[in-house]
Image 1: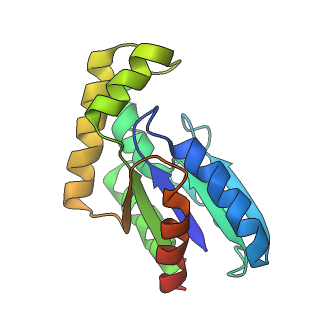
Image 2: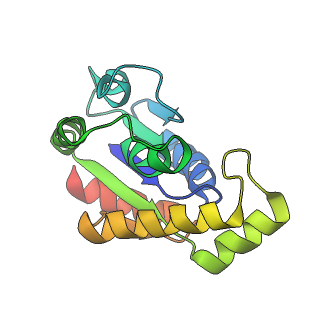
Length: 167
C-alpha cells in the first residue's frame, strides 16, 4: 500500500501520517513513513529511490512528495527542480505502485487560524500560505486525488479503505 499525503504546511499531513502509521501497523507487513522537503538528489530520483524494491505487502506513507516540489519550488526558489518529464516519470512509477494520492485540505479558514497561532518555519507569511493553498487546489483540480482529507486523524480509516480498494 502506497499513500501519498500532499497539501500546504499546517494542513494536518503529519498528524494523519502518524495515525496511518499507527493503524497500518496491525495490517501485517512493514510500515515506512517517508517525508520530503527541499530536494537533495537528482530529479526525479529524489522521489523514486526510496520506493525501489517496494514489497506490495509493505505500507509506505509519504508525508509530502513530488507535488510539494511543484508547488513550493516556484514559491520559495522561483523554480521547480522537477520538470514535466521528471513529473511524468514519477507519476508513472507511483501509478504502477497503485498509489493513493490524498489532498489534505482543511480549508483556508483553518489554515489561517493555525498559521496565526503557530506560525511556520518554511512559510514566512500568511499571503504565501494562501498562494500555496490555492496552488494545491489548482493542481488537484487538474489531477484529481484519490481522496480529499480534512486534516483530522479521523480521516485515516477512510484513507486506508480507499487505498485497500486499489490493492
